[in-house]
Length: 159
Image (cartoon, rainbow, N blue to C red):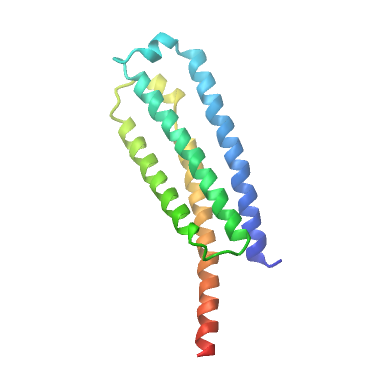
């Protein structure tokens, strides 16, 4: 097993662990939020808490879906199936999820909510985890690039 294979397998397990921890933190955040904030405050559409909570839940779902797509992508890469046509879709959908996540993150700033609610539903740690996983995904792109370079070189030598 070469270094790239070990690193790829390590990346897969790292993403799996961060996905589990991230999901647990999301649930913990929601539990703490509902313990501190009365339900009638949450359901009051005028104070903005409902919309902020809705945005937090949507971002949480986007992160979980992103993790699932990235894990599937890593499985394909671990099998050395670099040029699988489904990889394009996985990369495309994960990119779209990141764009939607960033848009929601920007839009949340315009929701007029008390700072205490923003602290309870803070997505900054999840954004950091998301960026970390994007970096790991980029390392996998590097593996694919190296493999394609080797194939191109081999092809050039045969000609």
